[in-house]
Image 1 (cartoon, helix red, strand yellow):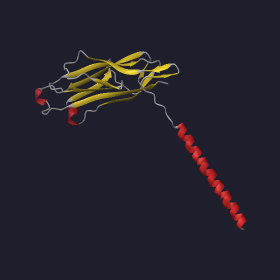
Image 2 (cartoon, helix red, strand yellow):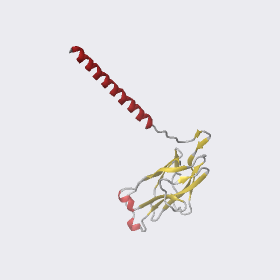
Image 3 (cartoon, one colour):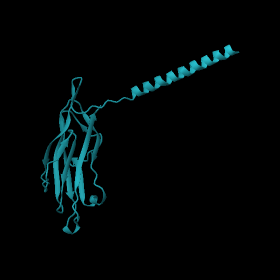
Image 4 (cartoon, helix red, strand yellow):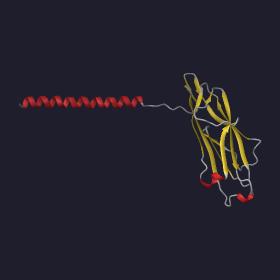
Length: 183
């Protein structure tokens, strides 16, 4: 009887061991399938290059405000600026180019702008659009060796001195673009 029980315990132990090993192998296989690769900046892949960046910041003809400092480009894909609008209908507007200098087509995977919250939204209009006035959308394509011009516009929407904000308000505005390879 003891010998029979030992034989069953040994079979049960081996079965548990096989189940545990199968679970470990399945987990490792799943983890290896879930790996992702992110490519940013300037990279060469099998003779192809990835080079998308912001450049050529310039005020537009609609601009009637001069900032204390020019907009700052960070990491080639983000821009920030600080302005202090104080007159009714004052506008700060500038254009900026997004350039795909690589050999791969790209598409926009993320686009965000600093939101204007609270009562300031009643006074400030902030937009980032293409130079033709169309909206920027996730999935927009940027073909290789091409560029697109964006227009950033901040306007003090108040049309009379009676409706001005009574306290100085400081806004740090910016936007961020993230492109991925268009497959």
